[in-house]
Length: 122
Image 1: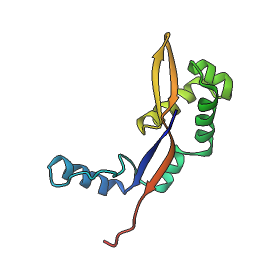
Image 2: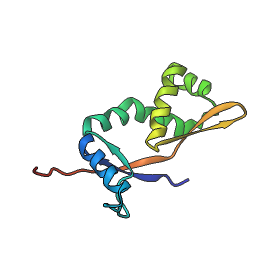
Image 3: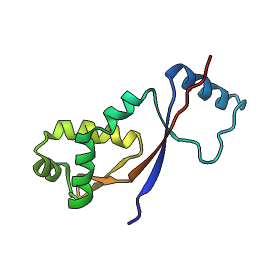
Image 4: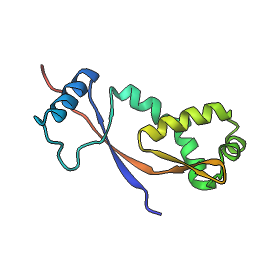
C-alpha cells in the first residue's frame, strides 16, 4: 500500500486566522498543492511528530494491530494515552481510526511529510 505525503504548513495562529477569514469571505482561493494541515510553530509540529509518536506509527505499520488493546500490549503504553495520541494524530490526517468488530483499529495514512514555511518581514 502506497502511503501519501502530507503537506504541512507552519504559520502563526494570528496569520492562520486571517487566512481562514479571507478564505471564508472569498478573498483568498486556496491553491492546489497548498498545505491542508497547519501548525502554529515548528515546536508544535515537533510535538505531534515526536520520536515517540514516530515509533508508535512504525509499530502500527509493521504489526497492523486489530485493537487499541493489542496496540497497548505491543507498545507498553496505557490505552488512555494511546487513545489521546491517536485522536490527535487523526485530527492531523496522519492516522485513521475505524471500528472493526467493536474495536477501534488504527491505520497509518501518511508516512511522508513535506513541510513548508517562510519568514516574512512585517
